[in-house]
Length: 443
Image (tube, rainbow, N blue to C red; front, side, top):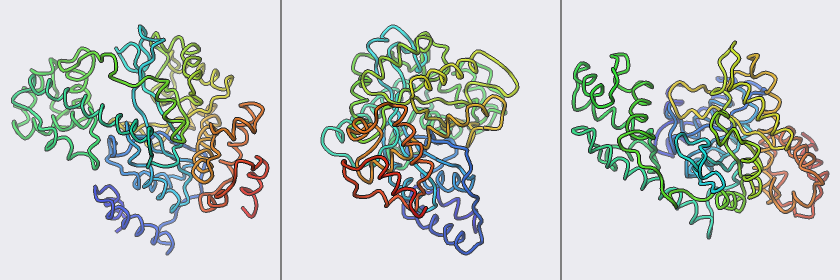
């Protein structure tokens, strides 16, 4: 029965997900499921099926699994939409999980127009984030900006599918019928398209020998039988050979294809989030100038940095990427930038949560926990009373970024989800110590 309810958490029907989560919570209350105390592990960068989750997780499913795993803080991030936000935060509160929600997209950085950053082969373009959004329902310019992100992404995908269809004939996708059905709110990604192509090819060719022959010929590599029909290797190869730079469907983005980083930062801050620069592995020419990149991004409002630790080390082995990871986190600490981190889970094989007990990550675990606590505290304070991390109140009430970080860390560490309403109705005249008093009283 428990497994059946957990399976229903990934239904595309919101009502079914809500009922399944309520059923699981009832089992917890009756003592049939025991949930652990929160530990110190965090993952605040997990994609859901509202953009692409390789395991098909809904916001409710990730919240449930995060609570079962005893995560200290958990957070969702989706490409170009905030569709997961309300469901995830509601589920987190119901489960007693500290939660936050964000958005990821790509932006253009004029100062780095000739340098590659986090988007391989695309000078001037980098992935960028906003974290800790208090709500998904925006108004005015912010609502239009968010809608434009979705529109631009979907138009890029449709144009891309048209070019790839020409090359992969007779394997051709109908974008509405074959792609949009793979995601509950019409926000398909390149990874959805790769999955759709893999399924369409299997439908047309059927037999493994014919299927392998088709893909080998079209992708220019020997396709092993073990790759058929939806393996990580096949899906990644389809994406690399047809959609990314050098692929048959790839077109170099032109001016205006992505918003300016400065405009994205303004949007995130106005919508109540924390503008966040992303970092990949420090090997691109743009990321080798990370101090300059941080200076540019912070000058227009970026106030945090995102890293994906698992991409940057192999257990038991030292290497350039691990060294780069330590260096960028040392720089983040020097600049007092909260560190956002997670495993993404938008590609097969990615972990549910990082292994913080490894020799490589254990020294960094306190930095990750602190960053997650700051984002959680911001999320609640911004939602309940508009006193978030980048608010005017925060800028006026702390003499330094370091003292601001310590306040939000302490709130995030002490506040329990069941007590978030304690912070409702506070005015911008409230002093930080008054807020801490509310958080810690009767905790």
